[in-house]
Figure 1 (cartoon, rainbow over the protein chains, first blue to last red):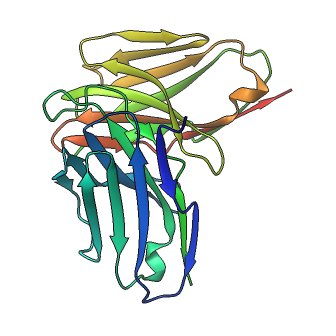
Figure 2: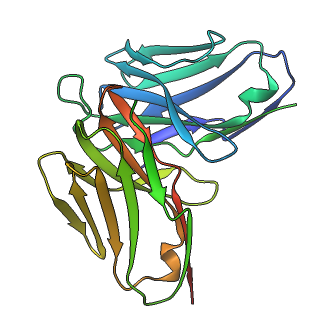
Amino acid sequence: DTAVSQTPKYLVTQMGNDKSIKCEQNLGHDTMYWYKQDSKKFLKIMFSYNNKELIINETVPNRFSPKSPDKAHLNLHINSLELGDSAVYFCASSQERGLKPWNTQYFGPGTRLTVL
Amino acid sequence: KQEVTQIPAALSVPEGENLVLNCSFTDSAIYNLQWFRQDPGKGLTSLLLIQSSQREQTSGRLNASLDKSSGRSTLYIAASQPGDSATYLCAVYGGSQGNLIFGKGTKLSVKP
């Protein structure tokens, strides 16, 4: 069984387009995250949601908008895509005590976004 | 601002060797530290999580230690195998930023 799944796995699109990446976790966790891994393989958090509420919003352009329809899903919508948005995007989830991730974060397989 | 550094950036060893990967962090006020493994083109797999009150965690051939006061952690891999080849990432939670901060990883290659 896939714990954290993302779709699509690969996404190739033109500059200026709007695209979405979907994430689902079947672990019953109440916290979900989006991370960006750049071309230098540096992994950095973008957003964190706890029980559908935004907890962490790092310095990310407002073209990126996360949406959590329910606890098991956290989708990432990106407007007006730019070349610099090309990266691998990872979704993750964890079960937290309070708002601190005391427990392991489980990662999805990643979505490789290429903007042409 | 919390910064996580991993040394070395890359490591190549013959099969069977014991090895140590290093991770250092600048802000010792962390809640926990995790070691992950990333295979090429794949997601991250959590290997070990050490809470701030713990000194070490073990899983099979892996042993991770944490010295919070000095801002250091090590991941010890015993009797390395070619299947251990991957990038190993260290991440800390806490400090002033309150989220998971990753190092850039150590790319390990174990030669048969």
